[in-house]
Amino acid sequence: MAAVPSPAPGAPVKLSGLSSRVVLRVVLIVVLVVLALWLIYELRRPLTWVFIAGFVAIALSGPVNLLQRRMRRGFAIALVYFGLILVPVLVAAMLVPPIVEQLNLLIDNLPQYVTDLQQFVAKNEQLRQLEQDYNITAELQKQASSLPARVGDAAGILSGIGLGLVNSIFAGVTILILSLFMLGSGRGWLNWVAERQGHERAAWLNRLFDRIGNAVGNYVAGALGQALVAGVLAYIVLLILGVPYAGSLAVVIFLLDLVPLVGATLGAILVGVITVFNDFPTATIVWTIWSIIYQQVENSIIQPWIQARAVQVHPFVVLVSVLFGSTLFGVLGALLAIPVAAAIQIAIIEYNSFRRPENLGAVRAPVPAREPPEPEPEPA
Image 1 (cartoon, rainbow, N blue to C red):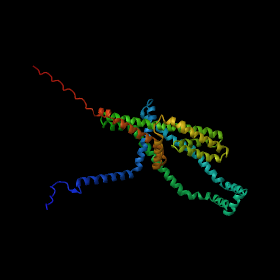
Image 2 (image 1 turned 120 degrees about the vertical axis):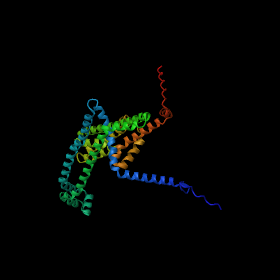
Image 3 (image 1 turned 180 degrees about the horizontal axis):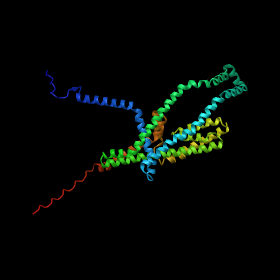
């Protein structure tokens, strides 16, 4: 029987047909991938902030470029950010006072509401029988009387809400600062990246960046325009119906209409519940009919007309992207889903255009060599 020859010195050891070098390389790649995924998971919050900051910077680049025609870019950025900070302050000033007032009114009048309920139950035979069996109104009266004393017990809940509010404010300030840096220097960073890819690739990348920026900016402008139309019309209808705090409710409609697919419905339901306590059933019926009609008009006329000029994304892609975004990141994911889908679509289209044979030929065409200079005549 012939002896098995031993491997030559320095040759890689074979393991089941694989060299030790290949096995080591595979193990190293797996370890690096796992390490990268772990690092991304640990940094998911700041990475999300950076992503949102980039979206904000792209969305604000349009107003900044418009103001830059009349003033320096630094002043334009400062003016746009001042307006951006002023918006939530004005929204809070319009929403917080009515909410606090209505909560105080509810707490003060809750015992009277229970008394009215007792009188209503006493006039209804079936409800009176339920009252005798379960003593419902007496329990409600007991809970209503003890409600003011329980305000102190809610300190723990309020502290948790306050801590969450502080964290949200910190995240918002961080995102604004990051977007400020991106808006001021982001184009220079993109140009630096593009210039490192060669002349042809640089032109393609610049075109890609411009198209994505235009799509995101147009989407934001279209969404704001659509929400503004919904808020103004809702304000007019609520004024006609005599619903109190029509301005605050119109702001709620405006904000919720920014959420794709379900935002307008949620706003209509919320305002409809409020009309129940104001002028039931007239105001509630009129508001319900108006909401149904307007949502049909918005979905079939206003939204397609606005978004067709903003982002050209198939409705199926819009639905799937909103579902994925809302599942992964909640309301924020739903807000960012459509512009992200538009950016991905633009990137795919531009990449396919760049990879066409004629474009590849242009990219890979060799630069013609220069003719060597003629030698100068030697002096006689």
